Image (cartoon, rainbow, N blue to C red; front, side):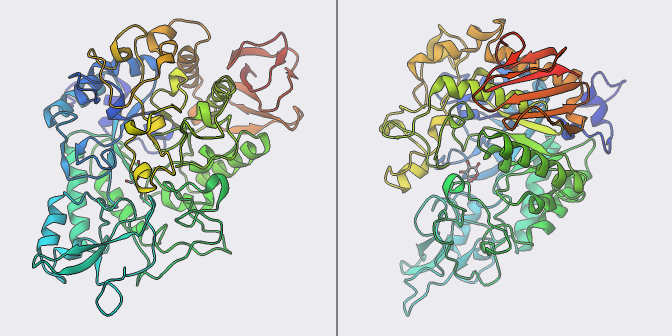
Length: 579
Ligand code: GLC
């Protein structure tokens, strides 16, 4: 965008120069578009950039500030685009660079910032850099781009260490050398088609500076950084056995045993796994921070970092590192008032301590949608839900809790992330047929884990249109449930009390009342199961228990996640009152 006259909107004003302390991302509500499933312009059943561009006005109407796009780069799609074969081009499935340019121009015209996904921990095996490494001999500069090692044992037939892939099985694959002999092994923390880069290699760092600049030059406002916690591995790649009862990558077990999104154990009594959260990542973040700072306006780096405790995660967003990190501790918190109070307090303490905003998030493309998850017990994230699951949630309870949880989340100071379809109240799709599933988790565990397809189904726009308006042919890369007409956007818009109207009201009032830059004061006296706090002009009460509670006398209700019953706040309901 060229600025040749007085800025017309806030976004143009920000692009004209940085606004230290008031940067847009400190308070922004950022909407995640999963390109495969948002809108399909050419009718082939796979979402694309033309489809997204047409639907962007709906996001403006919803009232979000920015859009984060999951990957649309050239990719064999073994992990839905998180296996990148060219970081500087668009996969033909999604369109062309011209389509991207039109999409970002339209977003900026609508006042929406654009964040793209950067996938730096690994590329696809189809990437030219990896293909060149395969063709080059052991010990060559090409091999040094990735983590190639000789195998153990007399003939090198054993993997270099005992690390397990997040998606199941060994984290090492042996190659065949160009002369046909069994050769070295390469590391892949995820799928075998996703080889890890060696981030100690300056060549790798230089390539990625180039990738950042490529997209910054095209006008992006920032990057969500995939697996930001995995880029540096401990010296010597020591064997590591996760503690008893933990997830395959050293998780803490139970709800936190999430397989795909490993809980990083950094408690004093548990060693940090040698592949996560190593100190060396901070140099990379500082380097990228400088790359972004050389550009106009306020650009943002947001880390996908499954790191705990929050006090450790805060190191990732020190003033010269990332700007934001996803608050997965919040996402993982069960529907329990004491647990929520604690995670909110810890988040605000940790992030405020380093001058960063806290972020808040309830759903994304890797986890069970919160309209289902919040009504589940004993779920294991990453394992998903399917026809044979024994812990299927009650949809009505799930939706009620999801609305209450979002009404709570959007009252918190800081920046919040919303995943496409949650504004429609979409649940996880539980009954996808086995043959439709595409998540590598499903294949690598021989169907033992359903994986993440249930939260990735194309979203419904129009109740009576083919594929509910996802396209005009009716094709859909994952089948949409028969009962989704009621969730369609056009069935909810203008309908008082619909989930879509609730989100619109929440976002409008959040902006109007400037809640994102507010501060939180806890209030006492509402009982153990009620979360009660003041943020600026409002008092927020979330009844997380199962009995109704009296609202304070004279409480002037601004909005509520459910209709209120006289002066009581029903179970699983959140209200904002004028203080
Ligand atoms: C991140 C992505 C996930 C992907 C993985 C490997 O966790 O969010 O979808 O499978 O990284 O890139």
